[in-house]
Amino acid sequence: MIFGRAATAARRTFRSLRVRNYRLYMTGQVISMIGTWMQSVAQAWLVLKLGQSGTALGKRKDAVSGDHHSSRVPSPAPPPVFRPDI
Image: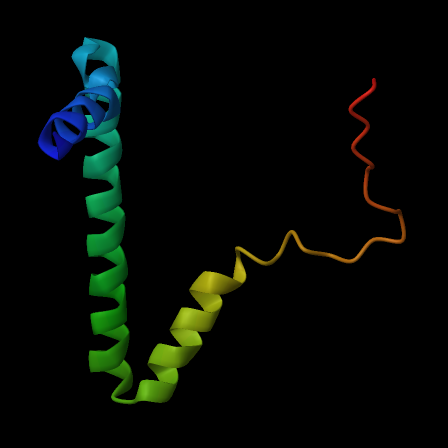
């Protein structure tokens, strides 16, 4: 019985892959993520080889991850309030 439910859940989970355009989109996203990962690993390896220190590698990591936090600038304005009645 449990295998029947698992098979049904698996069919529902991957139902979107029946659509050709979605398969093309997801394939492109997977290839893009693999390329991004390869670039990140290669860059870290290059910094480690050229810098000969873990400190340079840590600075590289901080520089790369710093761009994700640049939009978190404090603001004097209050945050928006969610109003479900509107």
